[in-house]
Image (cartoon, rainbow, N blue to C red; front, side, top):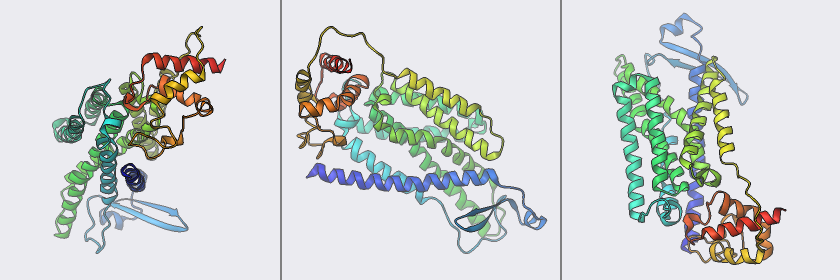
Length: 394
């Protein structure tokens, strides 16, 4: 019953996280797009009112006229819409999922004894420390003199993010490292909203309400953090979906793969932002495509020499029953799973042969299964599965 309840909490939390994430990313992408498509005000009257740019659009059968003021309007309207709870709700639901799946289930999803011998308390403590410490380091960098030079700031941030990816992969399972990499970037993004963007907006609103000329500084700082957020978005989305792709997080050089794909995502976003401005160079998109192709080539399965020894499905079934069927059974005996993961059942010869490709992929190619090698499958048993699978392909 406990595992069933956790599954439901997982389902509901993931659903909320998905919905709120769409709302946050959608509004963020829209305002970046809007900023980059603004045109100079059409009339001198609007220019005198402080309008810095405007845009006409049509959507859903209606016409819209959006204006952006250089600092603030002469008088504020009675109703002013804020965009913050999309970010907060996404982070709260994401942290709920992180705690439920990776911290509560640390022994299954976060800790890999082959990577580092950690207790659940140590692993979770390190995860929390890394989340908080990463935000503090990033925030101090942005507030330092380096924050005024975007090119050098980007180089330093990329170096630190690469170090973060490497460090996480030395502490946690590949799957746990990837999800915490995404959680760090997501935490920085929402902290930017909570600690910098929204307070800056409130300062400007308060000044305008008092009839004073708002200080443009908070708006400039908020814009910088907002731009950083948009470049973090695609790497975060990859990290949050990476648990479906063991070929990445299960690889020997998983940290390097994570860095390369994250860089490709940031470059793709750079290309689209530049395209919105009407001055897009295809170079960022080309580099991103090359990076993805290099990753695909690097992690592609390698053919091995044929073995003279043959392995029967019956022999493999004995390994599968010992190492895999605790989870992949009609009624799993492993407490963490109320139902077989992915609906995959490996009890009979027919079921095992039908899932031969998946078994080989997960246990031999990516080595992602068993999760954290909880059932202690040996190298000889992995080799047996490899020989069996290749014999079936001949």
